[in-house]
Length: 139
Image (cartoon, rainbow, N blue to C red; front, side, top):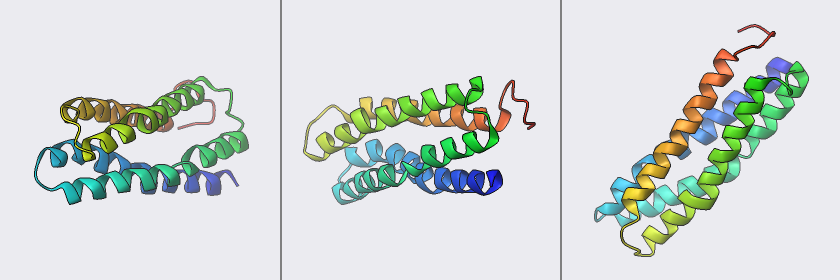
């Protein structure tokens, strides 16, 4: 069962978080140019996949429970970083994208920085999921 849940978790991460990171990264640059329709599409992509992305921690927690690692430090740190990334997306990035689309000036550069931080958080989570420092379940 653990392998099945892990497969679902990884698929959900790749199929949901991947598009968010790409679309969010492209948004600030596209929003500065005349392609407002593309920027709107990128924002919609981020919003839609953010909703789908809820499956990632759900499958992740189920996988952790089935493997008996919910109390492991690497997983707790991953959960904390995932929570920070989700909060950054929901409370900063998506609202800022909406404001940029509404014509509010001066946000694109700051938005690029927040998006970079969001992507870095996910990169660290991926490394923690692969390396699992201190894990007794093997690599």
